[in-house]
Structures are given as C-alpha cells and as structure tokens.
Length: 229
View (cartoon, rainbow, N blue to C red):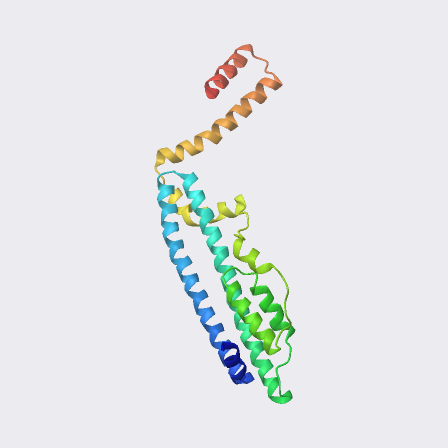
C-alpha cells in the first residue's frame, strides 16, 4: 500500500527539490555552527586548566591539556571546511536548477558529486550526505556512488598524531605568561639544572684535555663530584 501511495504521489519539480535540499543544507550548517561554538566554549575551560597547572608547575598535565586544545582546533577547522562544502553544494544545485529551466530536466553535476563524496567521508555529516546521495542519484544530479567509506568514516577517530612541536607551541601560547610568573624558587631551579649540565661539561672537558697544575686538577675533580652528587 505504501509503495502504491509512493507511485501515485506527484514527483516534485526541480524547484521544489532545490528548496527542500537547500533548507536541509542550511539546517546542517546551523548544526555545524553549534558544534563549533560548543568546542570553542570547552576550549576556554581547558585553557584555564592549563594556566592553573602551570602555576602549580605541573607541566605534564599542562602539556596533556595543550594536546587536547590542539585536537579541538583541528576539529573546528574540519567543521569549517565541511560547512564551506555544504554551502558550495547549495550553490551548484542552484546552478543545476537554472539549467533545468532551459533543458527541462536536471542534469548531472560532477562538482556536486565530488563534494557529496568528500562529505560522506566526514564523520560529522556522513549520515546526512548518504541520504542526499540517494535522493540526488534518483533525481539525476549525480551518479550512484559505490564505496564503503561511510562505515569507516563513522567508526574511525580520524585524529592525527600531534607533534611535540605543535603541542609546545600551544602550551607557550596559553601558559607562557603564567610560566613567567612562577615563584622565584621554581624559576631558579629551572635555570640551575641546565647551568649544572653546562658546568659539568666544561669541567669534564678540562680534565680530558689535561691541566698543568696538579692542585688545579684535584680541585676540578672535587667540584665535578659535588655537581654530580
């Protein structure tokens, strides 16, 4: 019975199809904007936690949180790219309908097909784009795409491995000023360690190269043992 009703239901004209697709594309864009705002709001909380960790000189926690910031920013960039592609689909659909007014039917669009295929690989909009793909294939806008990217897109994390350099850059950006305000004792300790290493290296070099005065040699050895202990 439902199949019979579907057959008797009048087929929407190109303009009606366009309005429906564009309405749903706009809704998807609004969903993306909402996701971006949520991520950015959470980032502010994480930034606060990074500064608090830096004040406690807990740089391990601060670095882990900086990695979260980096991942969230990459997610936001990905969402902006998705939104731009959705808007591009809407624009190309408008062009297709304009052509349809002249030729009397919707023509295939390689640009729309490429954009839909790309977005089917994006976890955030993969399910919606699968529906669009079926409808646009039926309407003659794109050809049927046979691939297995949907499941893998939904199941995979798709998070790139963050490099130490990138994480350190974010950490410096957020906690650089806070780190500069650490207690004097902490800063002195940070400076003492590399200074000790440099002093040790210089003294070892002096011993290796040899010195003329035996007393001076003994003094260098004593200082070296003291630094190492």
